[in-house]
Length: 122
Length: 182
Image (cartoon, rainbow over all chains, first blue to last red; front, side, top):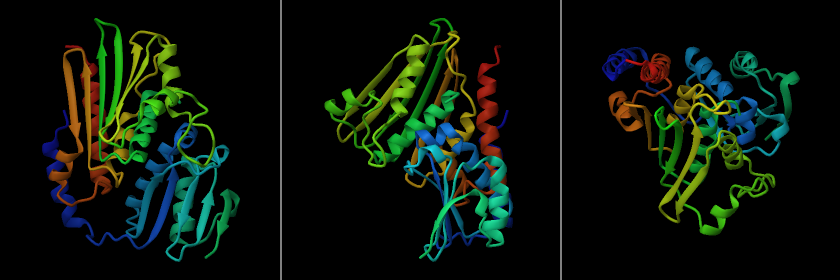
């Protein structure tokens, strides 16, 4: 049976390899996690974002859960807020689309028009 | 919603919206009483008697993005379909406790689902200081609390890949183990 003793070991290993510079200044990914979002599949989408981002060691990206975004029919909705305030909204996001959004939007800086509900430039 | 873990995530989001910093989730499965009970307690702002009487109505909501609020009505419906009931106990300034019961062997009783995914999302929620999980299956109990985990991690984020994977499987395995009859 797994116990928390092992967690301590993993923690000590992780601290050797990880980069401690976690900062809040970068890109923010907001995922609608109200009843509509959850029922449409926002939970696996959020978990997938967390996995993809940590696996790729993207240090300046925060993934957060927010309430109802008001467009329940388009859930799961993912809003990406850049450092300059530009917002991109992806609609009906599936787990399958997450890796693509991470690679294209977050890493290559290219918006995926075909998944977008809209964008607000600042 | 297909399973209890999704209802739990949904109701817990209400707690967070009500400014809770501690959430306690209690699941009890009792074969001899043929009862499954799910309780979600928080230390949020609480509700007035008037609001408590309205929250099970799908056309009542406190948010302003739209005029329906389906979280609590969904859970009430799921519980009623399995011959159970939903009870809300809330005190202004102290917090809220919502209990949903289900007949354990009822065909409409939802499965637990991926509870580790729900707990993980709540654990990383910046507004939550502690999350307590207590799962009882007949005579066996699995308890888990975020405070202990955070003190072991001592500053290492929960989202470190190895930690994230470990915690999810830790929760999952321990719950599977609860169900294993001796």
